[in-house]
Length: 394
Image (cartoon, rainbow, N blue to C red):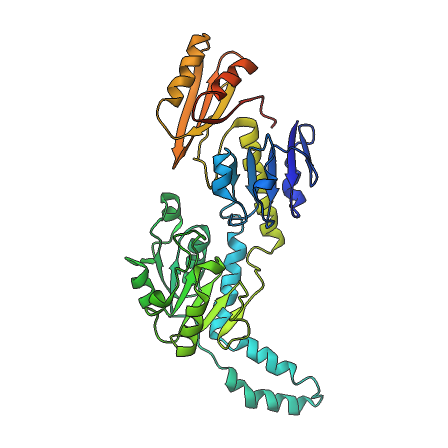
């Protein structure tokens, strides 16, 4: 029986994918094998003996101490792309709000509640509407900084709105490149993208390398009166430098999904209350995706969409499976194979992958490993954890 601790409200559509016969779920589950979380902040206090996986129903993992968990051999999963359409649609709203006087227009109309004479009301509307005149997005240039699951969808949406689209992503994966429309013009670097764009939208993860990416230096590259959209992460932009850019006119608008002290109510700033993934569909997609990933890991040892361990998958071939996480140093796998050979245990299939300072191995063997064997492998210097897998529960 696998034990899953659920924090926050995880969509029932996802949780129902755990077979009740083999899984015990709940917010108060002691000693869980895995934790599922959305926004709640985790710490080392949440680590109990036997915890081997954390599944984040969302893309960002800044609420999880990933480095500390990696040291414990805990695989941290996220769900990139599961909420991409929800964020894309909110970016579309941000683009429209940036060009048309929608918000001040609505605020003006709300002041007219006491006017009951239709002719008088129409006269007032016609007289004042020119104050809210905007410009069209068609023909404007959108710079998309980050071309992953969300960025590529935003780029495609903008093309369909007849915008010119320029993209830049120094870490563009092959998979993401295949998704990207050939109509997206590639910028050589971030400076080139910003200088060419009327509107820049950010879609990069929150990493140490991206913190304060938009600062006084990069803001100096913007066209006078440009617009910046941030539906990625608050810490990617420097608040003080955004304020200075707005006050100087370098930026006309800053539209963000992250209300920030010092920016709320400032002219040119539009903030939404972190609505990016707040749709029924996105929450369901994230929950289903993270459940499937955690299940595959617990039952088969396969890893997909982990932020701290390598992607690894091996089809079950019958027999028995051993999975082990270890420091990424020489001779550990050789030591494991020597132990198996000394016990006359035949290896059917195996795979080894590494990522940064850790490695992960799946080894299928003919005979059932004993507890004594698992313990012997676990005592090898550099092995973080080791376990045996039973049958998959499809």
